Amino acid sequence: MLRLLPDAANNDGEFALAARMWDADVVFVSGDDAVRVSVRDGRIGEIAPAAPDAAAAIRVRGPADGWRKMLQPAPPPFYQDLYGAAIHHGFAIEGRIEDIGPYYPALRRLIELLRVDGSD
Image (tube, helix red, strand yellow):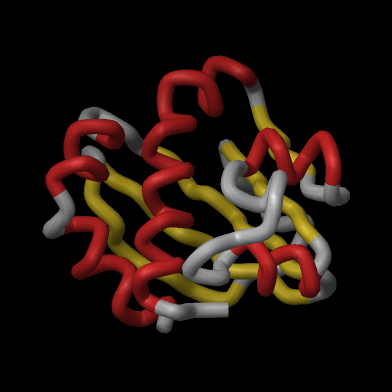
C-alpha cells in the first residue's frame, strides 16, 4: 500500500543514496487519480491525494491499466522502467530535465519498492 511507501523508502539504502539532497513534490497520475509524494532532503514525507494537474516539480502520468502492469512483481516488456513505458505504453514523465535527470534513479527505486509492496 502507498501508506507503507514512506517507511520502505526511508529505510532503503538504495533509495537513500539516489535521493540524497532531493527536495521535490512528485505527482503520480493514474487515469483521473493522482497522489503527491513529498520528498524533503531525500526522505519521503507526506503522501496525499492530489489533482492530476497539481503543481509539482515532476509528474509521472500513465493509464490505470499501465500502472497495474508496471507494478506487477515481474512487469511485462517495457513496463520495467518509466522510459520504456513512456516510449511504448502511453506514460509521460513531465518536469524540467534539471529536476528529473539527477533523481531518475530515485523515481525508479520508488516504483521498485511499490512492486515489492504490491501496491496499485
